[in-house]
Image 1 (tube, rainbow, N blue to C red):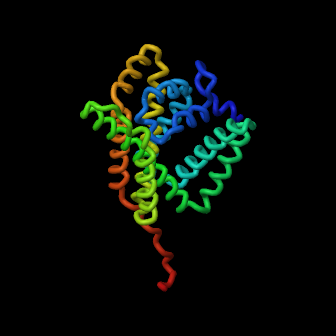
Image 2: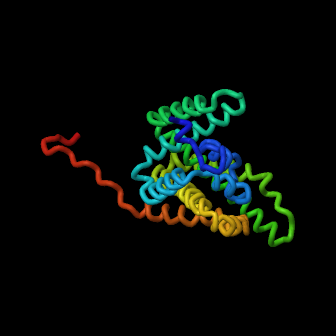
Image 3: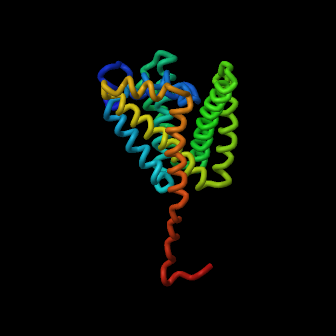
Length: 250
């Protein structure tokens, strides 16, 4: 069942876990569209639709469903790490992926606050790394120099990890809204790109558009993330349940 669910497109032998590990093999993946597009093209239509749908749900109602979103992300992260580990130690990758994914998903339930903090930190790391490389590319282009910021993207990733990870303990709702908006926007954009790349007549145009400049893909992810952040923050808090009529005040 797991190999079938992980299967990717018909034009490649890559499966979903291979696509995920390849796409997120570096934290500033959005700033390297030339390496990202081939992996998105190998994603199947089914998983592209799933990514797009799940991403839109996270953007619009991520805070409302933050617990299942957190558990699902923990499952995907654990499965991807387990897959990569299985490939490295030459073990059965589906077994290591399933075990580690199930372990991280189960652990995130009783440790939800810490899981949210970790997800917020990872989202901040993702934002910081891509911003570091993208801004460095813009500055290098304007100065007529070669861009070397990609080699030090770990600095931006570390800054984002610390800032957004600590934010989760101070402003819980903002942290949840932020990481669901960023992760949802990333999934939705990647799902949409994968769907567009399934049409042979559009592949060249889409690839050229995405690789025309390093800032294009980060902007496509940033704008929906900001829209999701605004929409979720503007939603009213759910009212607390009323106490029973006969209950006494403490």
